Length: 112
Length: 114
Image (cartoon, rainbow over all chains, first blue to last red; front, top):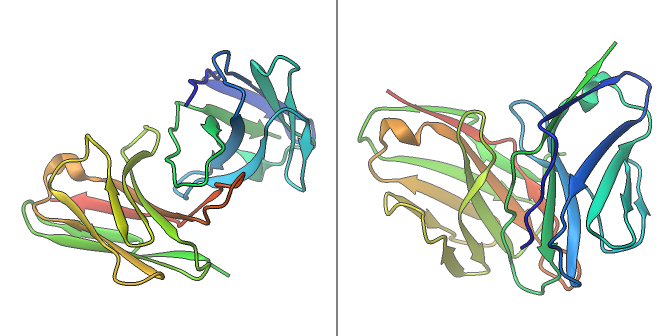
């Protein structure tokens, strides 16, 4: 699986959009970009994933650049409950089980 | 409703005393995973079961074992816990299908070794 690079930490004011970048310059054509988050003392939570098209669900939007070398997770209206570590993970499309290789992630602090 | 349930949430054991952590799921997923997460670090996969097939990570110590008696339950056994095994242990499940490999995590069991 391709390696990812994320900023160590970010701050965001409550009610504003949080834009979390991820670099995955070595991604290959069949690899998806997944985002998970981990709120303090809880298990990781799946947020969204995509291959090359932008994706949106009830939690967030995922914007993937045309060359697929980077992506941005957008939380449109951040709340204090969105304070967490956000992990960007690249993994292949597969019909067999495969592991999630977590990087260091971005610690997002949402403030009043 | 909790879909991946880990018990207990907190476990204290003594150095060298065997301990078992449990995980159950109501999702009927065919894959179950165990991760170890030490303080201020990212989760790290120990092993997983694909149906009844056990898959160990190359760097998982022999001290760690797992059992999956049926689809719903999976256990993590630590035969002789050391101080370095104190960590959060996370169970996850996934339904393997082409194009989808989303993992669902439990809340974790925090293990302390005295």
